[in-house]
Image 1 (tube, rainbow, N blue to C red):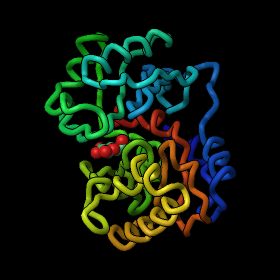
Image 2: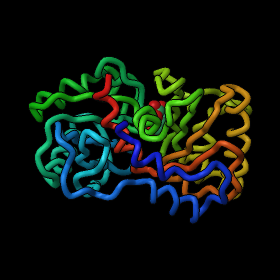
Image 3: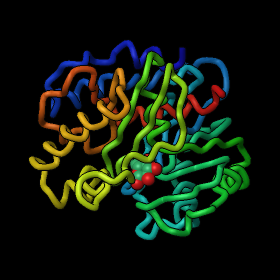
Length: 267
Ligand code: BGC
């Protein structure tokens, strides 16, 4: 199984998060290996609100390059992002195919929402645009789905949430993705959505202490709603968690949001 190496190192469900959890989560990321497994090399890309990140990954889901990053353009229209992606790709070696995690709803290669990027993404043929540009087969999926593919064990109901600029979510049953879950945009408390509290806007507005309190409340809310067997928390702001994680909740490395891209070629 491709992500087996990463999974073996997954930490137990009861732990003190914060710095230690992040260190443990980082330890889940396989080191760059010298000799790739035979088969196509996948260029895995994660498009975020602040950074565009990429790595080359072999068929077993192990990195065969360093992680490279460029800033997300200030006005992240499709054209500006495509141009930045060109500069990102130039930092890496050759690849055979491409997987992209995108921060919005995607269906059949077309982007339908991108609330933290730019309205010009609505209805944009992203997959086709990349295929035309790089002359390689491309698969694009929601960023939290990609993170989930990197994290889940394939057993029971597993939910992944990502805490970054936005709040992402993906739900799996026995390893199979139920696509389209946008928990971040579900109403929660008063007249707001989960993302307003737990995304970057919420963190900036309420401060770290209150944000942590809200996150713990949200975890319990999702437990009641989905009855998950395990919850994974990823994204750049997962390192800000300062409470003891409840049972069956794990912080996962942000790198899983890139490495999970290989899974898009399993189907
Ligand atoms: C988007 C999601 C995405 C999340 C994290 C949300 O605003 O609607 O699709 O997964 O941000 O990037």
